[in-house]
Image (tube, rainbow, N blue to C red; front, side):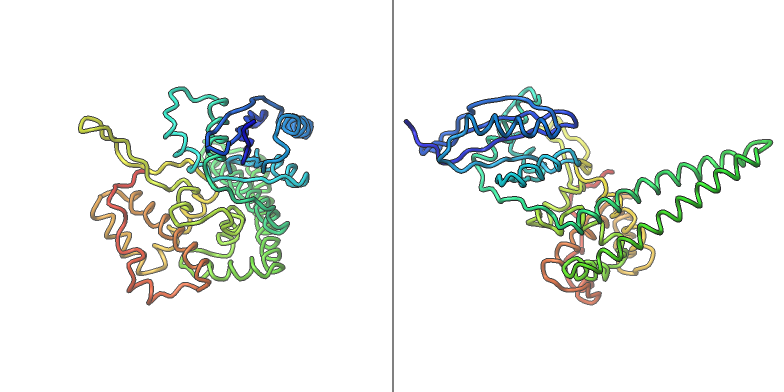
Length: 351
């Protein structure tokens, strides 16, 4: 009987369902997709999946559970498997997507997706995932809660403006809307205070936030959001990976000489990172002369404000990773004299 040297359980995680595939890698490096099943994305489904894998997996070969870092639906499963002392590997979506393209799969389904994840796990070196610290997890929850609060407050402000614009505004309606806006503003402020306290409790988080906070346009809340959404850059190995994880990577459709689509950012990534980087870019351009001149130069070249702003977003995000890796705060003179942001990529950027 052929010896199995590696096993992966590729899991395509959806809101309500787990699509699972178990694969073997033999000594001759030949992959074999051995079994396929589906389970509910619930604690009961997690237990059934674990039992199913244990029944059919090779007891003598290392076993890896592989899934994408998409949304929040994978988190409960990852925590459960880690508590069961399983080796969990969480991979950035762009890695899986790029690998899946090489398989030439014509029809994309949940089954083909989990098969691609399984094959990726068998053919690549995998790093074990570790749970984020309780503080980083709490910061992520709080910053996302604040994002929802700000959305609701914006909706109410628009509603208030519409109500005041009527021929005969209802005073009691206006009063109630104002009270709700006041409440949401207070809650948003409370969250900022709570996030600040949490950051100060953790030495690594505090040190990293201080470094990122030194960058023009990036404040404490933005820095806290970045380290929470990236688990303090735990899954990130390069600036390119980080921009891809945020969905700020450039996609371009070309085919020979007859098909050429406009390059645009993918937006297939962490929307919370994109949102905070958008606000940071707006602030950096407004308060910092260097970023303002870069924005102006790009704007003049392309004639589209959003292209210039997206370029600033990308470079600010890349800078957070560079400074984190070097453990050095932002140095304006070094930035001014370096080639870190002397020019954007040659491709045009579309939002």
